[in-house]
Image 1: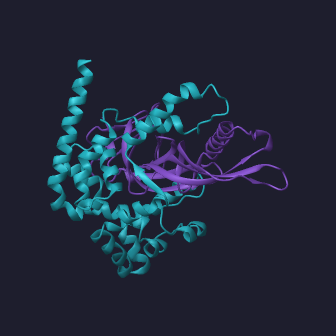
Image 2: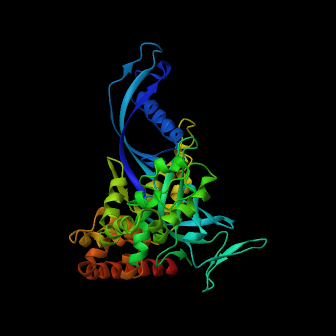
Image 3: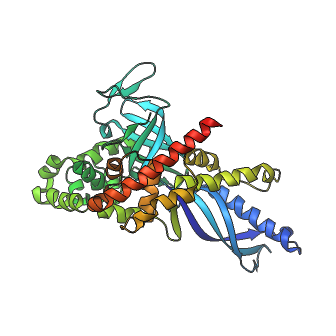
Length: 176
Length: 220
C-alpha cells in the first residue's frame, strides 16, 4: 500500500553551498534533501521511498563546529510503498522454481509464493516451467497474480524487502 | 473461508507456542525471533521457512508437541475475532503516516513525473530508484476516475465503521462483487450484514463509473 508520511530530517549543507540569496539557499536545501531521500532508498517502517511531495518548514541552520557545515532541520511529506501483512496485492511472475515462484510487485522484486501456499497448483517442468491447477489456470513467467501478503522482512544491508505470500483463499490467483 | 482466515492470522499472531513445538528442524536463530511474522534470515532460509509456516497451520503436528490445549487455544481466538488483523494493519502504519489508494498515489506520482521533464535538466535533482516501478504499479488499474470521486463513492462506508485503511484496500482490489470484498478483506466480515447494502451501492457506482470511462475512451 502507498503511504503518505510526514517526516522531519536534518539536512547538512557544506558551507560553500550557502548563499545569501534566500531562494538559492532554499533550492540547495531541497535538492540536498531529495538526494538524501533518494540515497536512503527504503526503510523498515516506511517501505520503499518513492518521492518527496511537499517541503514544509525549514528550521534555522546550526553551524557544525568541526566542519563548518550547516545543519537545517526540514519538515516534509513523502510517498512510500510498503507491503503490509494481510494486504492483497498483485505481482508479475519473474522466476519459476520447483518449490514456488518469485514475483515482482511494484518496487519489490523478492516476493515469494511457495508451492505449499498454492495447494491446488502443481509444477510442470520443461524448458519454460510453470504451475497449473485442475481448472487449467496457469502461473507462468509474465503472468499477473493476485496474492495475500503473509509476511515481510526488511533486509537492512540491501535496503530491500522480502515477502512471503499466499494464494489460499477465494479470489486469489492469476488475473486475466 | 473461515479456515483460510485462520491460517492467514496464525503465522502472524498467536503461533508462538504452537510453533515452537511442531518445528523439528527449527534452528535456534529463527526461534528466538519468531515473534510476529514469518521471518527469513538469508536467501537459503527462504525455503527452510516454508515448511515451518506450514507446520504452524498443521494442528496435528502441534498436538504432538504441546498438547491439544495449546493448539486449540491459539486457534480459537484468531478464527473468532478477525479484528486483530485489522488492528495490526493499522498498527503497522508508522506514526505520522496515512495510507493512500493506488489511484491517489498514481495521481501524485504522475504529477511529479510530468514535472521531471523540466526538473531533470538540473543534475542536482534526483529521484529514488523505486520511483518508476512505484508509479507503474500505481497505474496498473488504469481505468479509475479521479481519486476524489472514488473517495466520495466509498465515503458512506465510513459511517458503518469501515476504516480509512480498509477503504484503501477495497479500492485497490477493484472488486466486482460484494463477496469478493468480504473474501479479501476478512476484517469486514463481522459487519457483513450491515455493510452488504452500502458496499453494493458503492461497487455499483464504481462499476458504472468505470464503464462510462471505458466508453469515453473508446469514443475518443
